[in-house]
Amino acid sequence: MKRAIVVGSGAGGATVAKELQGAFDVTVLEAGKEFRPFTADLSLVGKFRKSGLLFDERMIRLLFPAMKVRKSNGEIVIVNGNCAGGTTAICTANGIRRDQCLKDIGINLDKEFEELKREVPISDDHRKRWHPGTKRVYEICREMGLDPVPSPKMAYGNRCAACGRCIFGCRRGAKWDSREFLKIAIEKGARLLSGCRVKRVFADGGEVYGVEVAGPIRFGFLPADLVVLAAGGLGTPVILRESGFECEDRLFVDPVLCVATKWEGVGQDQEIPMPFIVQREHFIISPYFDYLSFFFNRKWKYPASDIYSMMIKLADTGSGSVSGKKVTKGLTEIDRDRMNEGVSLCKEIFRRLGKKEGEMFLGTVNAGHPGGMLPLTVKEATTFHHDSLPTNLYVADATLFPASLGSPPILTIMAMAKRVGRMCAALA
Ligand SMILES: Cc1cc2nc3c(=O)[nH]c(=O)nc-3n(C[C@H](O)[C@H](O)[C@H](O)COP(=O)(O)OP(=O)(O)OC[C@H]3O[C@@H](n4cnc5c(N)ncnc54)[C@H](O)[C@@H]3O)c2cc1C
Ligand code: SF4
Image (cartoon, rainbow, N blue to C red; front, side, top):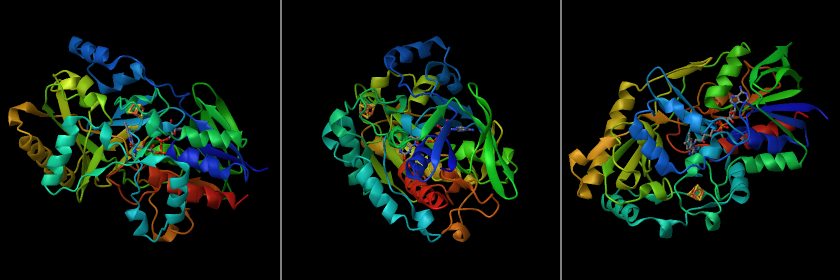
């Protein structure tokens, strides 16, 4: 059987591996190690922050190695998963279809989304578990005509303890993540090599014939008849560039800013994160306890149980890039204007709750949805393959998105990766 290498085991990689195994003999190369949830008592970490020793978000890796944090030159804290399951292992379980930018260039993924509905447990039936504070904020959003919608969650609801620790990994196995697709691929015969960082792909005569691995655990050359890159919106462009293939400096990241208020005993840190979403033209808002700001931002001085926070997640301008370890990305003036619009909206919600301006504070700008550096256009809408790449080299992650979704992308990445996997299977 011909050999395929899939690089990355997150939303895109695990989906491709599952679709491809059988047609090809699949090896998944994952830079991170096996995922383990962070099980420490978060209130103890919260107390530790007062010591002043937690001064840089990148230090989170010392406590929780699966969470990789870097800073762009524009001072955006960028987070992604570096482990089996990729960023899905640390996600907040939102499973939302957001494929308008793909529809706009003629891509119809209805069939793939229908399949995902059958394969992934998704439900928005969690309102009964919301705390009184969240119920009140939801009502205020309704009164303001903001049309809040309970978030569809990729989870086995009966196992969920609504503990609020999704971004640290789920200890109860309630949250669905892409390791479930990986497991199916492995049961069908695929291999997962973790601790295996792919440096570049080797090509000759318009075809790839293998990859160079330079991980901390394994290194050397691995042969392949097909390579699918799904190393994420920051990982895939680096491999492409190292291999001599150009990308576009159109990186988006979906920047997030939280507006928080003091609210004694509200307990948002111990409830389902992002329980509902308000969709605006250029951003979403959603209740979200921002642990990164809580641990590292001095303005977040109250105990976790006394803070209520709303996230603004922006569909940012695609202007930025990644090269080697350097991420070049900041907010443009348009991004800032839109972010400010979100801040005003969240503050108005808090004012209607009776909160004073002096009780409100902002979080640290962070982001976790990178992509856009090899965007699909009308030209690639049927092939999902760029002419600039060798015929047997494909990409299957958010790198392909023509624009930022400004919204949780996992489901849309998986629908797209399903299509890529099928197209590649036909090459066997
Ligand atoms: C805290 C947080 C919460 C989130 N919550 C949600 C949510 O609720 N819903 C949602 O839809 N989205 C959410 N997201 C975003 C979502 O998880 C990601 O956008 C999505 O997982 C990206 O999928 P991917 O396959 O492109 O990359 P990833 O899932 O990031 O997978 C890429 C994998 O490739 C590996 N890799 C990178 N470079 C190499 C290399 N050179 N060689 C080998 N392996 C490599 C990485 O270790 C990683 O495992 C969240 C993001 C964050 C940070
Ligand atoms: S809220 Fe807690 S139990 Fe529920 S999915 Fe998230 S981490 Fe798991």
